[in-house]
Length: 166
View 1 (cartoon, rainbow, N blue to C red):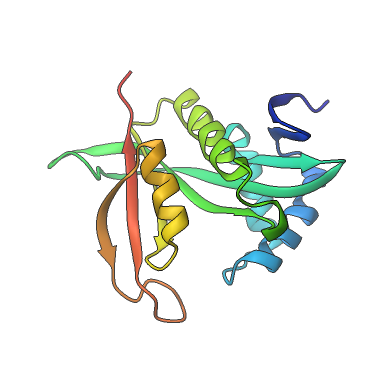
View 2 (view 1 turned 60 degrees about the vertical axis):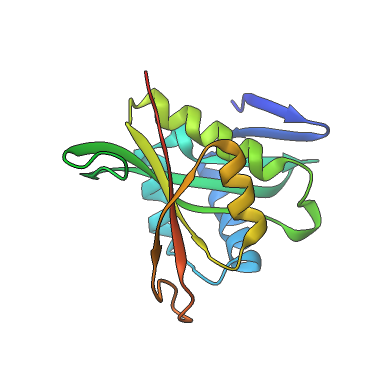
C-alpha cells in the first residue's frame, strides 16, 4: 500500500514501489543525459527504499530521487571513514518544476538517509545547473570540491554535501 509522506498541492510524495521503476526510467530518459539499467534501479530500491522517493500527480509520476549508502572518507572530517548517503539521481519533469517538488524530494531522501544513521549525504551536480546548486545550498548542502570533466560530455561537477548531527 502506498502511503503519502507529504503532499504539495495535488502532488503526493511517497516511497517508490517496484511498479514505479519503468515510469522513473522514463522520467530519467526525458530529463537527464545519464541513464541506468533497470537492474540498477531495482537494486537501489531494494537496498534503500527509505530514500527512493517519487512525486505523483493524478496517478502519474512527475519526479523521483534515488540514493544509496556507501562507506568512505568524510567530506567534512580530515580523517575517518564514515557511513554516507549518495544521491545517485534526482529529476522532475520540466513542466512540473518550480513548484517545490524537487526540494521536497531531497528533504524526504534526507529523512530516509537519517533513518539509516548516515553521517552525511553527498551528490554531484553540473556546475552550470545554477538553480539546483542554489536549491541544495538552501537545504544546507555545501560545495566541497569541483570535479573536473566529471560528466561524459566533459562538463565539471560540484560535489556538494550535508553533514548530519544526531
